[in-house]
Image 1: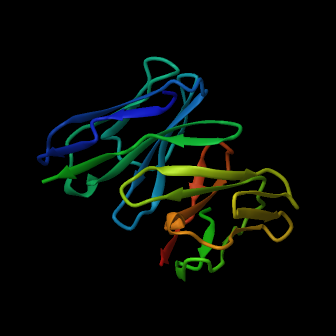
Image 2: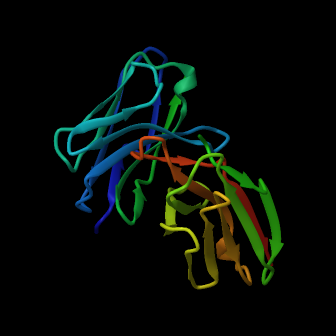
Amino acid sequence: DTAVSQTPKYLVTQMGNDKSIKCEQNLGHDTMYWYKQDSKKFLKIMFSYNNKELIINETVPNRFSPKSPDKAHLNLHINSLELGDSAVYFCASSNNYGYTFGSGTRLTVV
Amino acid sequence: QQPVQSPQAVILREGEDAVINCSSSKALYSVHWYRQKHGEAPVFLMILLKGGEQKGHDKISASFNEKKQQSSLYLTASQLSYSGTYFCGTENQAGTALIFGKGTTLSVSS
């Protein structure tokens, strides 16, 4: 199936821990993104990568770092997790015709 | 600059129509529309690339008024499956990622 897949789907962890979320797309898109969706459903852009180059880096804490080993993958690493990091994180990729989102990772920090 | 969506919520009975508006304080070059069902990822509906453009499939269509810096999504003869949150997205200043509105929640009942 052609898609954007991200793992894990759920992540429950304690404050202070470090965690990673993986994302892969097989659509051949050049650009990939990470969005954060909070409890009010607001979708906020965090990062985007185009051909392994970081294009934008919104004002997110530097505890968050994207890593892209190749055009098809964009992973998100989060250090020293805080309660406020709890949210749903969506990976996406795009071409000129629109965005395709992964199914999301629900992160809960306790 | 985040686009502004209105209304925030719409409640319909099957067969009724709805219009969701999206406006921006800056010039728009394209507008995307997505639908997100509860617990799922946003799904691409359509993209409008130039002023005056109108698009649609099934009974969902959209228009783009470039001069007024706004777009509208039209849902005709709504079905239960139309329920969800609708987001419009416009490009950020650098043109490198979509900035989404806060969403419009549509509830269709039988």
